[in-house]
Image 1: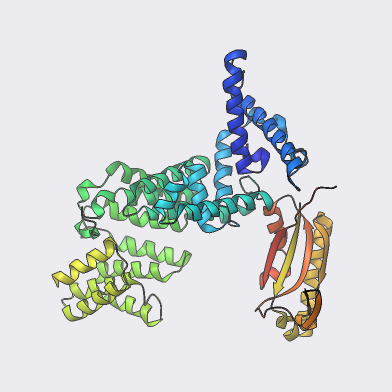
Image 2: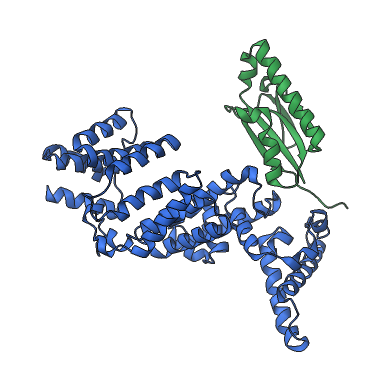
Length: 380
Length: 118
């Protein structure tokens, strides 16, 4: 319906009108042979009526006749494809020309079916402000004519990247506290893999499944982060880890594995290791090397440094972290200082560890990571 | 549907350009214009004189004021435009991405408002 009308709100109203008409007429006239086609064609006529009425009331309404000019064939609804439409909806909601917050909000609302209030609560924003952003995004879709379609092959990698980014944002928002959001993100990830099995879509789903498998063991009941080496591995969700690891292999088999698949591969090595000590740290460092070449970033370098410290000893890790800081990068990132502090602690250099934990504490916001830093300071 | 592509570039680039660079720049725009004429996207387009030739005109309380220069100083200035016709925003963005100025400046794509014929 959105594809036929090019307007989200109009499509919603039209479909409601069509359902109302169905309630009146189907019991009397019998259910039509193709209920879906009946609803869509009725909705379309209702929408055209509405536009005609509006045309008399408002100065410049869109012209319903231009629907045909825009290349829409009304007979097309007969073999209307639902899966294609869900994919179109995702790509439209995550269109890079829309405000980033609105992309996330529209995806959760239109694709996952959350209410504006639920989305606002999840992202700690005010519902009216969020509703306003959605209204603006919807009018941009209509007025700038953002097409309701899956992008052409030429644009697909870039456009898929913005869809995956939105899904990952939703997942990360739910990382510590909102299991429901993480579940929604995984559901979206599954849908994408089913509809468009591109290596990075597969990689992202794998990454989310592998991280989510550790959800129950990641924080204490009072909300403190439990570091990987102290987590109860027996409580990790084995079936999810197996599914994630299989997806990683599938992404790598395409020989087009990207950054999500690589991060998932790293998570899989962790997830499949019986303990922190028995983890294949060389494999992890190697995967980080590939990731850095593909997608250089100081945060990835920091993670690599932590893996090097596990493989070659804390001094080697420290040297790498200090090199990042010496370049003037990540100086205000609390996890850099927490990582340095951990390495000092392992070396028994308590004064330096304390100073680094204190610096991390100054920079960390309230949350599970901060709670862990506080515990470490007490333990020193 | 029609879109206006506003090309914002650092106009000093053209001032500083060597004759060869200038010629290349002109040739790039010439080739782009030809390509969108052939593809049927072209409706119109012009390059503008630099902002030091601009005059800002305002009428307040019926009184005309014409002052020198653009209204605000910016790093990139409006240097020209294309009016194009495109199927939808994705199509328009594709055309806009081929405007030579998009490689170092910014091209703003604005849909043209369409009014009903009386």
